[in-house]
Amino acid sequence: MHLFTPFECRDMTARNRVMVSPMCQYSCEDKDGLATDWHLVHLGSRASGGAGIVMTEATAVTPRGRISPQDLGIWSDDHAEALKPITDFIASQGALSGIQLAHAGRKASTVRPSEGGDPIHGKSGWTPVGPTEEPWPHDEPLATERLDSTGIERVKHAFVDAAVRAVEAGFDILEIHAAHGYLLHEFLSPVTNAREDEYGGDFDGRTRLLTEIVTDIRAAVPEGTPVFVRISATDWLADRRSWTVESSARLAGTLRSLGVDLVDVSAGGIHPDQQVPETGPHYQVPYAERVGENEMPVGAVGGITTPEGADEVIRNDRADLAIVGREHLRNPYFALRAAEALGHDVPVPRQYSRGFQ
Ligand code: FNR
Image 1: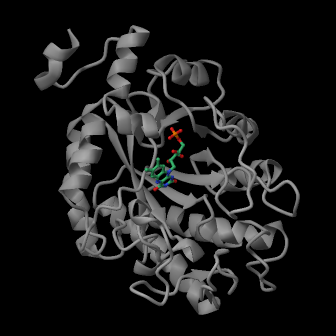
Image 2 (image 1 turned 90 degrees about the horizontal axis):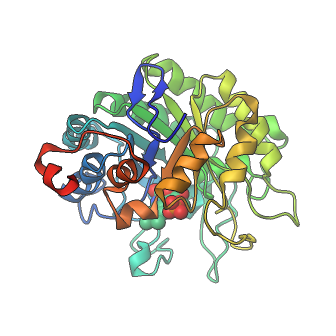
């Protein structure tokens, strides 16, 4: 097994094991979550660049679930229609398309990072929702609405409706975003979930919202469509009761039994006090190895930047996918160049063949 061994998952086969990591583009401008030419060119060029799977950025399942007003969304049929040319183009380049379905929870309603990332609650933004009224820690008090049982039902329906729309829009793979301190992670982690109802408390309570969403999505989309879940393997808060690598390994077993096909293993994001370790090459790969111990296929992400490094992760069975983020911002042709460097003969877009002779 190596980086260019195809990855088979339900009815889908990725031509190699390089996945473009979900990366917010904050580029809808005043388009209210509708995909623009930027998204087509950005995602399309990573598909022509040879990646096996091209995953969209966090795509909001409701308007309140956007991090910023410029986030991509999929809360209506118009949104799905705007994404269709993108999935068509990705397929025409021989890649699989994936969509990351997301709700930003209490981290919603901010200006985009390039403008400082500050909250805009009560100004031009909206009041975010979370497992409790406790807001994301900030100098100014920020109103956050606790989701009641009706609100939880709405969120579940929004995820399922978004998943069905995504399949109609031509996406091959669905990824549920349960990482980085956004809504589903806020329910998983005892740092943010102090609820006393059936969606809080012990491990089963805190994982209930995610497992119900997974179950409902699995039942609503075709059997052949893979479902991935991105998690934060750890909260990086060893000094308090928090979500740990052991919690993640246990969750992976549950997700496997519910028909999840792969856990995309990231880390952190739940609280500003997190103690982030040294983020050198492959810094999160050990988490993927631990989460994958339960026979759960996993994707490793974080600091994978070279063909040899990505290949090593797969060859040594440390993960099933090598997920590459920032290196894809620098080099959309990462996978084609990796094939060249590793000595694999892969098809190059005919228009570009002279560049790869
Ligand atoms: C990200 N990341 C991210 N993660 C995610 O799950 N959904 C998202 O929409 C985003 N958005 C995003 C935007 C940008 C500009 C960056 C750089 C990162 C995190 C990303 O997917 C990845 O996990 C990290 O960047 C670590 O991987 P690399 O970059 O070291 O390969």
